[in-house]
Length: 322
Image (cartoon, rainbow, N blue to C red; front, side, top):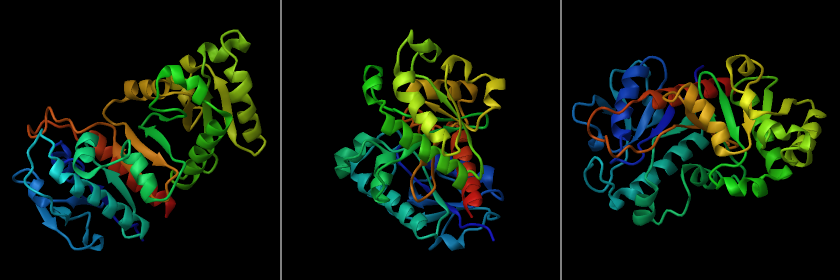
């Protein structure tokens, strides 16, 4: 028996979300069952859609994009965020999470939001999607994974200045990130014995302490402790030799110490097909790895590839979990 369909949230209506939702359905019809939660009136003119009352009405073989309607305040104006619609954006995310938590949806794929519009119109007090989802799921520790066809990466520290990474990189944080990533690879990706490669912080992984001691004092003790539990972990490794083709065959995910150390290699390998996956939630959540793209909204030139891959990944994860 197949899992229930994936819930796709509309995101910021003024962005490219309404456009790529229809494009994704055209590409995935017959492959991935999903439905959009949003206002059908915001879809581009000519989008073939059908309103549904519940997720169980979705058929992957259908010819029209299934939409669980959620009416917004006012029309869509491409490229111009309207704070009056912010409460609708937030409510759509809440509906999707509730459907996934109840088992009526297999997971949630979120189209991009505009945080300033949400703050202005709805008093949105979260840094972004991930933190809001963690709040809705009553979860404290979540991990960001960027995944593509050739590489999965997990940054230990994320959106902080490089000058603050050393202080933020604590043994507890590193261990938590590794444990969540390891568990998710087992339960959501179907990898029975995950292999992890852990990067060092400093050039050449510190070169025995000559270029920094974080590898010796922070990273290695954590990795040694986790290895005694049976985890397959390599490292700390020199980050400049971890991402070539031969090296990537030796692990299922790379644990990196800071944002750019993780994101530069995956975006270089395949910029359009990278997917943002939130690990540590009780539900499956994926997202395309791009923003609202106000500059091209309404032009019909948006690239749906990352959203297509995000929906595919959510469906694979749901299938592995079931």
